[in-house]
Amino acid sequence: MPSLKLPNQQEIKRYYTLFSVLTKYGFEDVMAHSGLLKLIPKKYLKSHPDTERNLALSTYERIRMVLEELGPTYVKLGQLFSNREDLLPPTLTKELEKLQDHALALKDFNVKELVEQELKTTCDTYFQSIETSPLAAASMAQVHRATLLDGTEVILKIQRPQSRETIEADIAIMKQVAKSLETYSSQVKAFQPRQLIASFEKSIKEELAFLHEADNTEHFARDFEGVQDIYVPKIFRKLSTNKLICMEYIDGIKVSDIQRLEANGIHCKEVAQRGVALYLTQILDHGFFHADPHPGNIFVLPKTEQICFIDFGMMGTLMPQDQEILEDLLVNFMKKDIDKIIPLLEKLAIKASISDYKKLKYDVYELIESVSNTPIEHIKMGTVLNQFKAVLYGNQITLPHSIYMLIRGLIVIEGVGLKLDPTFSITENLKPYVTEITRKRFSLKQLIKKNLSRIQNFNKLADTFPDDFHSIVKKVKEGKLVLVHEINGLKDFQHSINKATNRLVLAVINAALSIGSSILMITKMPPLINGVPLLGAFGFVLSAILGVWIIFSIFKSKEY
Figure 1: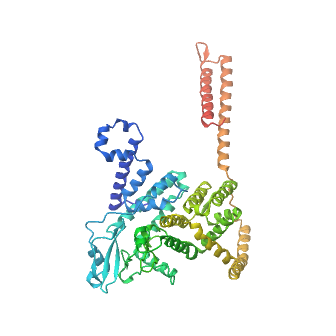
Figure 2: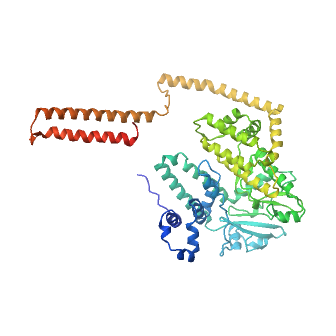
Figure 3: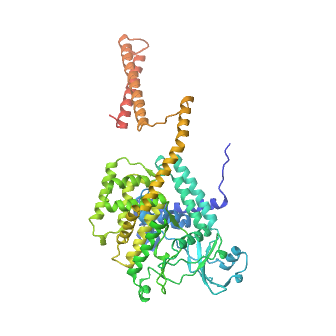
């Protein structure tokens, strides 16, 4: 007998919060979309401005507000889906883009006590001082400035108490909801909600593990070792745990603070060019990129004018094979070679249910032409990528999550570039990469590497072929070879045949009833009521009811 898993106390608490928030916004939504709003006195609305404001909000705005009120897990989930037009309506994804991971500082947040708990020693062992007021506060952590004994300025990113427990309870609820949706809705099942939640769980648990962020920071530093344009903050491993990370304090200027940049003699146009070039290098050269490059995560060091990325909790990774496909897509997009673009999209996709290749070809052609006919200084990468996502959605192509992270990152970084320089064009930055990719593809080293790989694959096939052939012959001899095939539309065809057969049988029975009843009426077979045979009359009534039911079912199904 399967065991029944009961929710723990934390899960019950979160269920209560979830239902409370949903009921709160759902009730207002019903009022806003019904005639009840007209019944509320205007005098009451004037004295309760919050109610009046809430009632005027759209459904998608309410969804965002629900996610914000439910806390970090749901905010992160909303951010995850904010660039998934293949799953959600574009109007909703636009609303989800507004979600910000900010929070008020906790009043009872005892930073020194939490640091001592994590380091298993007193603060005086390593620190001269720790500021009690946070430098920044997010839903999962708070950031405090501190000074080490040797005078080094650092920041301490400390996980908020109960964050892990709340997130784990939320994930458990999400899994249960996803399971129920897959069970009771075939439409939702097609989007694999359980797989999406599993991917989200992996992502958010990596963010909770601060040592994973430390690993990412050091990985990023290795990728750019020796590059003068970029600076990566140092991690103090000895003072870092899964709930505490200690890193070098960056005394820089946010790229969004244009006034301070100009006051320090830093040219914003140059910062835009270098910053975006560094981001493209992360993607195309290293396949390891910052997934959230918003202005708050990019600084410029005033003394050296180096660019510094911070917050490496969420990073995107591209497999070497996917990197190659993306490079080929970029080159063929520039060459307008549609016949090569479509197979590359299929190769990159994790799911492609393309029903009309001609439509896909036309959609890709239309996208390329719209870009080609626009002056290069007016091409906006964000617009192009959003059109590209619309093409994917319209042709039922689903790409790996890392590619959607990449698309979002490119849109965000282009926004940063345009803020620094209104004339900025990311396509100009891409030109050197296209040239380099083309040169690399036709270099002697690459051709040797590619052909060597083909020879190795052929040798592998030659090695395994005898065993595979022997296995097939053996199954044929034993009668165990099974051919699995599927005829599209067969089930619908069988259903139609069964329905038609049932109607035919009923029609035959109805005809037999009518003929039989007529014979009974003609022969005046008793029993008689007022000279009318009872069985004959009953047969006619039954035949009429059956006939009406058959006609009604045909008209109802609209199959006539």
